[in-house]
Length: 604
Image 1 (cartoon, one colour):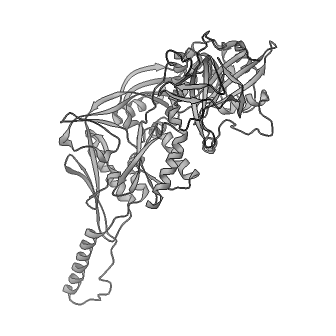
Image 2 (image 1 turned 90 degrees about the horizontal axis):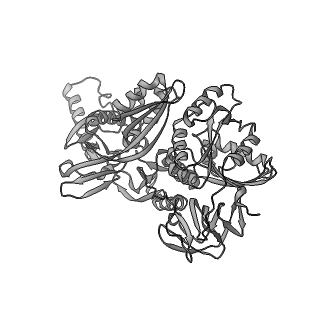
Image 3 (image 1 turned 180 degrees about the vertical axis):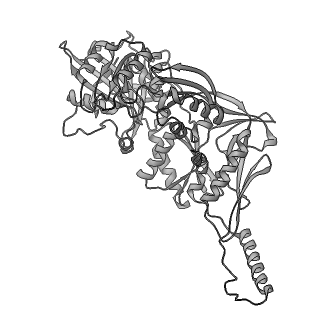
């Protein structure tokens, strides 16, 4: 029986690998929401790649029923959100669909950067936060220190912090009681106009797009004509229902409830996360707040391993885009790599997941160039260009100003590594420290403004290395700022290889160019002729390295005799090598195109 007072909508926020999905497994078992025969670990992680990596990529809702100690049976809607910074917009929209949040912290690792970022997001969304310490069964669990960090972050009393072990199922009943007692029921508006927030959407090849929604007012049922307010498209509802976690059809979705709508929507980009659904016959005056277009932050060239597979790669990207509206791609052509695509991603994890899914699900080997960000270039003729491919960066004499994206970077680190972190960001990565805060005993939050381009290159690994694995980071886009940037073109055998071009700050151009040509010297195999590798910037060569030719000993058969005979043979070989260098093709392996990502590896 529908009763809004007995509904609780919550999400779970945590850093990666703090046990969100495992906790939901135990809740599903405790409330007997899943048949024991169907139960498996990480139940809500539907993709193989999520299971193997232990990360959540897609937000997944589930509806459970819990009979509380007060005798009432409550409907609890839980949304398992992604923990990675790449998917923070999805996390924000999932929070907007809830009244409460479980803040889950690993007892062995403590409060980390993304935990802090998502906590502030939950406070902004005015959610009731239930702090929970997980993994209390671990031998290295530091419950006392973790409690102090949570108290410092939220300002709560220690007795408000729950302690659970998601692995062993300890403390699950107390957590469920806290949800029904602390989290308020949804606030129901009197108006009959339908207002439903889209917090996720996925493509089903038989039924079209399945839209996950939270209804704020009114109701939706089969046969209703609905509008998606960002684009004004009209659809007829084929089915509404709930996630149990399997899709279960229902008669109607009413105010306060979480569920799904199927309405013959053909493309995920037509039902974007954060959009509002309303009725065509009785629309709401204005959409629910918070909607914005998700824009790619990182770009890379993607090419098929063999040119014959170009169309297969196109089909693979089109199929992935059906389920991922943030993925963008357009055809690209490289003299070195042939036909391919320029693909836009939310971040490096998103890029890695897409590459792995293409290789697994479609059986395609792909060549991925080093990632870069979007630059804005103002030309002397007044035109403003948005450049996602360094090879298309204009020549210096045509440029008036260049702008690059800056991010607000937060790093949580033990105090002893604070100097290392400041040095890494300010000296090596052109960042500026603007704030330091205490984050509990012997932990500090460092806040920087830094160029995004510097964060996507070998930053995460170096941060972990400098802090012995203890530091964690989170960032969000700030704005575009004017910078002194220059394009560096790499020439192999005097031919420019556009896939190896990169844009870098002028102060680092020579150092970076020197490292790249030296790295390429190790990665490109030797040929029958000498290969010069050059880096060109500002119209001149700024670095060079040579790959020596594979040589045959032509003097081996000369057992003495006149020296002029030997000189004649060497001259003949020299002429042959010269001719070969002019007509020879240099084979560049896949590893060479990722040389930019490897330039920092030898410095550790």
